[in-house]
Image (tube, rainbow, N blue to C red):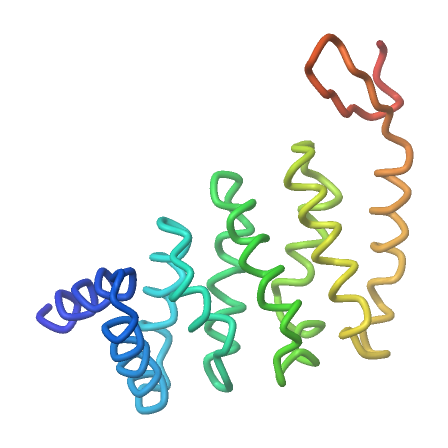
Amino acid sequence: MAQQANIGELLSMLDSPLLSVRDDVTTVFKENLNSDRGPMLVNTLVDYYLETNSQPVLHILTTLQEPHDKHLLDKMNEYVGKAASRLSALLLLGHVVRLQPSWKHKLSQAPLLPSLLKCLKMDTDVIVLTTGVLVLITMLPMIPQSGKQHLHDFFDIFGRLSSWCLKKPGKDLLLYPSCCTR
């Protein structure tokens, strides 16, 4: 319980306007991550980032090393599965994959990839779809030959998106499946 309160205090200090405080707290988090191999701290950091969009927390999350990569991917997978947090989780995933972490080869075996593909096959939110497709495109070179079992899914997704129509009623932008009536 005291450890949770301590983590909460440290998280709030990460957003301090004083650079020295942020650097010290970031060092404390990285030391804790090096000594604690469990998922609790990574899960807390992901939760905090999704609530606040804290840039220092994003920096910590995007520089995680093994074994915390699995915890990060699992937590993002959990949030991609929830419509309310899907966009934030995809944005976080986008930040992570753009930095091409040393464990990028694990992306194709993580449960997060099938969840991303399912999201892109089913979701109708334009922003989520656009973000998800950008993440997928960024991930494609990182998916080794073993990811070829997803090839049909990739084509299904791009085929689905290419069959959508664009309509601009007034100032609103509406994207809908071409099979729908206008």
